[in-house]
Each structure stands twice: as C-alpha cells, then as structure tokens.
Length: 195
Image (tube, rainbow, N blue to C red; front, side, top):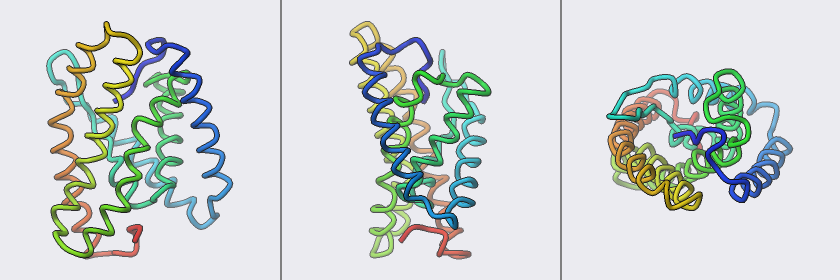
C-alpha cells in the first residue's frame, strides 16, 4: 500500500506533504494526554500488521487495519498511522520519508469513514457495517493509490490497475478481520470504540 521513495513527482509530493504537516500538527495540538496510550497502541497494531506480507504474483499485499484504527480512534487514527508510517520509513525504508505525506493521505484519510460506519452499526445490520469498516477503507485507499500513480504519469496506469486488483483480496480479508474483531470488542469492552 506504500508508494516508494523516488517514484512520485514533486508536484504531488509537495502539496500532500504540506497538507499532512497541517493535519498532523492540528491533531497533536488537540490530542489529550489521556488519549496518548490508545494512539500508541493502535499505532503499534498498524506497524506490526503491515509486516504480514502475502505474495500475489509480482507484488504482495499486507494487512493495513486502517478501518479498525478509525473505529478505535476517530480522527486520531491519522496520527497513529502517521507515527507508524514514519517509523516504517525511518527504520525499514517502507515508502520513504519523501513519500510520507502521500502515503499518509492514501492510507489514513479513508480511516475517517469508520466512526460513521460504527454509528450506523449500532442502529441495524451490525455485522454488515462491521465488515464495511474493514473493507471500505482499503477500497478507498486502493482507489487513491491507483489515482496517485495515474496522476504521476500515464506509464503508471498498468501498475495502478495491478495494485488495485491485487488489493481486492485484502479488502475482503480486512472486512472479515474487522467483523470478528469488532464483534469481540463489542461483547467484551464496548467503550473502546468511538461512538
């Protein structure tokens, strides 16, 4: 789900990075001390989940769990994902620091759908919405990733199509993981979820 360093044009990197600086700064400013452990735990979950790689053809997919991050943290999911992406770029070179802003927008912005889906789940069709909490953010991230690659140049169109199709299995997998995780948390400790 990461775009590697050196792939994107500055016309894409600079505005995305500027937007992310404003967004992350705003979230840090509004962050309450009591929310720090929850942000740290979700950031660690995101960081570790992305190490589980499943090879598909010439590429591989990995868990993202951005939907669950959004269900647990709401807007602070952006902050948790930023921290994890920063350390992945710094320690392992995943994505790289220059593409950090773009990768953050691609992965974290769809996580903001989760609180709305969670609220809908408490009204009816609980299992369906819990599945969507995992499925929709990956679908949106895949679309954003593909669009970013196409905007970068027409020569990236085949890669964008491959990225999108390879993430179809991940969408279903994350939907299932989300369904089981949220049903367990709902039974055990419902107050962990953003309502």
